[in-house]
Image (cartoon, rainbow, N blue to C red; front, side, top):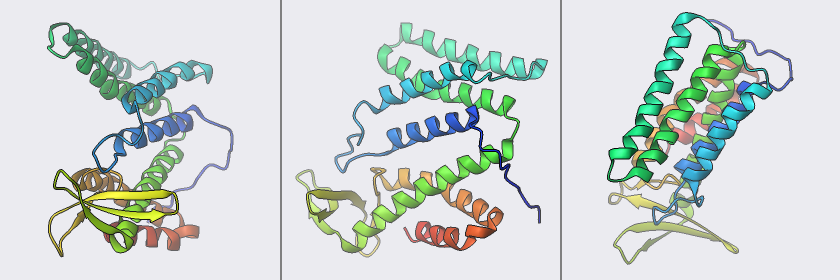
Length: 230
């Protein structure tokens, strides 16, 4: 078995800042209320702003990309697709929607490509990304399971079933789908399919960290079980 080692240098790297921005944008776009309304208002605008901020801070950290011809061609083609996508708004019936989705789709791809082609410590960066996904999936799973076991079922005026749990002034809620005893929870993802897509990434991420970080392997074992139990 190969052993991955982490660099002990604590100096802030631009790749870690980009990972943090992408994680915040993931949370902003993923979380929904029981009414399927985004939990964070103006989430798409916040996400686009974070992506633009990520592109701005790269030169401040002397972010350098390899000048190999193959890499430059890939980055150029990605930018070209981005420009074409933006230009397609000119003949679209929904120009604003096309512009918004073009930024949301292509800006993170551009940022990630720049990070991949310039990162001098890819193992450290990958472990950081996997940790973010693992914690995010664990938090969603734990939230959904608490409501599943301790929440009360209510039927909305639209005919949807939700589970609520009141903790003082705070009211937690989630939509559930299906019929007893096969209810499918949605946590804060708004839909079981969305939650499942997140866990498809976070469960393998948890397993990877569990195999590489022996000191906290026991903790990630329980995190993994929580996610499977959802």
